[in-house]
Image (cartoon, rainbow, N blue to C red; front, side, top):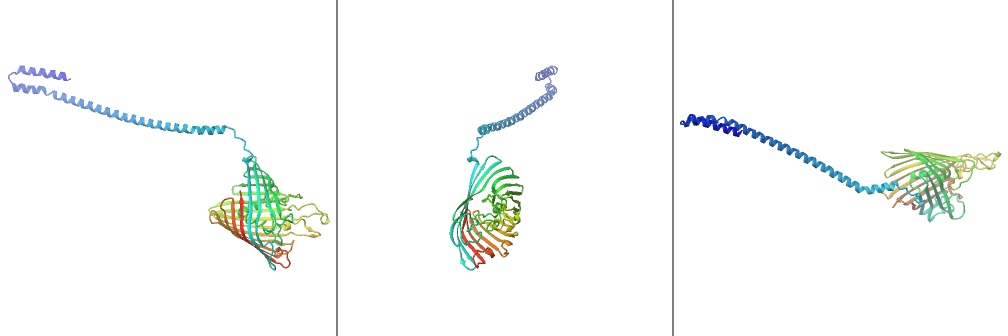
Length: 474
């Protein structure tokens, strides 16, 4: 385009010079008039050049945007690649552990040895104390004085055969102390001793085969815990200081016996039933019938603390229903019966509870028949109440107390409704470790009526004891 424009301009100039060689001004004017059309062509050229530059700028801008997008995509890919590499590295690092775990899981487990499925337990109750026993008209009598005593020592072996079957053997050893003049049933007088000397008695307290079908049903065959006493002891919490009211001094219950036992729990509820010989674990004798004891209980946690309630009962001949000659050639046996009620409340460090029983035909370990010679013996009756409380001052220190009131013979066998037995204890317990308890305890016991020692003129007696009571368990 530039070449054509220059050619046209040259032709125009030559023509103008030929027509008017002498008129310079006219030629100049003519030249101006001919050269004027070239201006629009240059302006158009500039416009085209500007447009081309704008197009190149836009092209460069677009290329830069694309380059930025490509860079962002590349960075994203690099980040994803780095994350993948880290994950793969972690997987490689954990691979040996996983492989080892998989290999160990695939290897058959060795059969556990007898020791792996066997547990040995023990428990000892002991005390060192001073006793002051007095009667209404003779002052101090035996067993006033000081002594260190081992009240009980239990040694148990529990073996698990599999998830369902297990077995337990627990022995009960105690010293057979023979005290003269002691209050009936006190801790220093072991009623029912089989010898007249100081020796050691060793019994099998528990020996049973257990089948745990599920949480709702467990069956034990042999000598095992009875439904009521172990449950009440757990609620009371200080068995090593004193027994619970049904066996503390005037026994109207057994802690274990020979027979078939069933127990289980569902939600808040639990139960236990036992069909037993009736004479207790120390006397697996044969009799004509079997006795029954049962318990139904519930433990309910609330926003105000945990409440535990239970009812129980017993019925049977206490192993006394044995063949003998009776008046008129017939044997008619009294049935020992007992009803139990318990309520316990715990809330943090606080424990408060109580127990009540009413029973008949438990005097003298059960009345054998309805007859003494030719005289018919009516039912004997007894009842007792116990209340307790404790407070956990620190994780190691607690204070506790218990009060009991028992009428052991309200009527009939030895007609004397005034017989009463009052008892209480208070103490401070120190538990340095879970297996040891050591309590400083004061006990007071008063009995009236025919429950007092069988000494002429004695109508009442008191028993005071101060000492350290403890237990060791594992």
